[in-house]
Length: 442
Image (cartoon, rainbow, N blue to C red; front, top):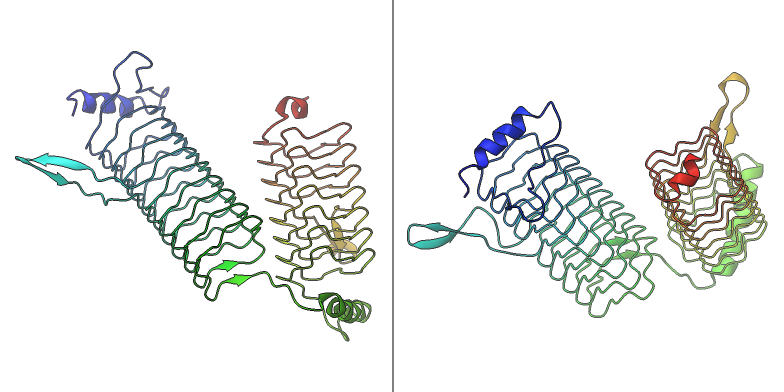
């Protein structure tokens, strides 16, 4: 432990109202050492703490919001209840760290190491473990929207953890315990879950393409609308696991459902029955020109379906798999497409503008909801997306030529490689947009 550390921290506190103090000396300078220091409840928000050694430090309820901890050592640190929203923890050593009830919403933990690791302290003539466990503890933590690309989480303890919409691509969760955690809409491509415990987990709408779930336990888990192309479930325990269903004679059953739905629409609900196709596998179905307005299709699989010129006004398509579907000319006004998967779908000339609901002065305009939807490579040429909700949507490499986005909310959307010729972005919210920033700013 370096004796000068407290004075440096005192200086950081004194300068809190002024410019942020960089506690990393830079290349060639000594690494600042705060091992086993008590830094609980400190205000370190926004600080540049790159490369700092905080092994075994107590950072309980410390505010590290927006802090830069790139390459820092937090081996065995006590971070219970810490606020680390949007913190940068790239390649950070978090082995054996305790992050119970910590908040890491939107944090970047790409390549971070959260494997097990026992921290020892010398007491007298013997080495004894400190307060930390032998594995990273993230139970009850909030990691919603966090980036954990290729992070190492083998044997980690993540029970009842909030991982909604987090990017976990390529992470290693071998033998990890995620019991009761929420992974709705997560990107879990190429993740290694060998021997992991996922009992009671909500994986609805998650992307599990090429994930390894061999010998994993998914008792009473939910994978409705999850993409499982190439996933390995060998020897996995799928007892009472809820997944998208593929029914026999689905084409004949669907014809009857459509007739009853049409009657329901024409009689304003007095006769017939509202179509509920949620959680059903309708891969490749031909529904061109069908009237499914106000139908329930949440977490349905409509991959490569033919929906040209169909009516889906105010339909619930949340979490629906519409990859490579033909949606050209489809009427989707006021529909809910939150977290929908539209990879390489054709939406040319589709109507995604607001739907007018009600009459006179009390009428409202219900916008199309595409927040957190995935549309990489989608063709949206000439589409009307006025006032659309596209927060956090992935529009990378999408074709947006002549697209109407007047008043649309694109906050946090990904537009890397998107074609934006003649796009109308009047009054659109472009805050935190990723990719094509200069083009948009112009």
